[in-house]
Amino acid sequence: MVTLIDTRADRPRHPEKIHRDDSPVLRKPDWIRVKAPGSPVYKETQKIVRENNLVTVCEEASCPNIGECWSKKHATFMIMGEICTRACAFCNVRTGLPGPLDPNEPENVATAVEKLGLEHVVITSVDRDDLADGGAQHFADVIRAIRARNPKTTIEILTPDFLRKDGALEIVVAAKPDVFNHNLETVPSKYLKVRPGARYFHSIRLLQRVKEIDPTIFTKSGIMVGLGEERNEVLQLMDDLRSAEVDFMTIGQYLAPSRKHHPVMEFVTPEQFKSYATVAQAKGFLLVSSSPLTRSSHHAGEDFAALRAARLAKLGM
Image (tube, rainbow, N blue to C red):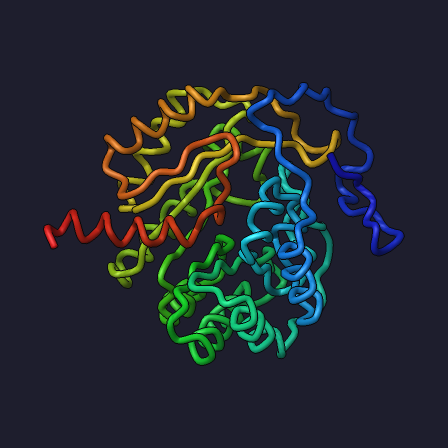
């Protein structure tokens, strides 16, 4: 569990959460524990990230899989800075007013992808409600820079919702990422407390619109469980995603970054995760990843290969 104070500056990481009462902490079960990072390859990945002045969601969101992924030279780059304009109750990314966009970032990301030798890369971002297009053009610039330097690398993006940013989605889709991911995060009944700046059905429509613009792009979305949701709500959410023709669904355990964040209401068992996967597969997703440590970009390269194979099998090719 992390602190609310930013270790790189004497300021609150989450000013909106400072005065909240501490939430109770549930003891983590054995199936949630991971090894501490520190392998030589992990340190090499860290060095490349630092040298290119990049931010990763692996670090900023305190991902439990960072040791495994960075030891394989897999990193998820977080563009447009490290400060988010939203204040979601589950997230550990800093909240506040972001600075200006870095015009060198697209090329820096492309360089890091080349140095890491990535066959598949995941690009995400903070929410940038302060920008007229929500950062859509910057996403497109990063995609095109990666393509120019690494033409064989497949690109997956994990975007914000571009709420009230007309035309933003079209700019991103025109850059033709291979996978367009936008996470619902939780069931609609929990949005007011967990994701108050977002709108559930806007996010569903966003994913649906990607398919309408370019049906060849794989779409993907994920949720966390353990936030107090009911099973039937998760099953309804699956139906909502399928109505938007989403190809790939991820389900993982919510882990509270601090006692000021939304509390963990339950540790969902591995058996329950397997049950969710069985139901989701029956509903028609091309691919489902459902486990306690599943995260949006965990095993993304292997998952992309499986997605392509599943689509070809469905088409009888």
